[in-house]
Amino acid sequence: MTAAAMPTGELTLRTLAMPADANAAGDIFGGWVMAQMDLACGIRAAERARGRVVTAAVQEMAFAMPVKIGDTLCVYTEIARVGRTSMTLKVETWAQRYLTHVMEKVTEATFVMVALDADGKPTPVPEA
Image (spheres, one colour):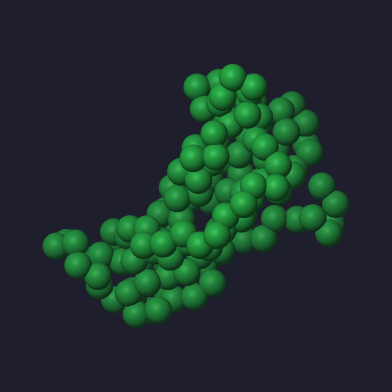
């Protein structure tokens, strides 16, 4: 990984890509990668909201390269904006290639998360 190619944001989730998450060619399903990104956003947004959050939207997402069985998926999040009841998070997903220190950016997206109260209604995000 060069200085020009460094992840942006806070490392929020690391997980291992396993055979059950892959197609017959050994490529990890894009939906599995997106689910890990959603989990990472849920963790980061719930910490910021100090409570329950849900995913409201995911903006455009394209894969630059595949994730393979054995790679460690590393999801980085950054809270880009906090509104009254919602947060916008920038998410980058990198693959640490199996048994190496090589890190490659796989995809990125913008997630919008909404804070909810005990009744499941949008609630204000507390001040930082």
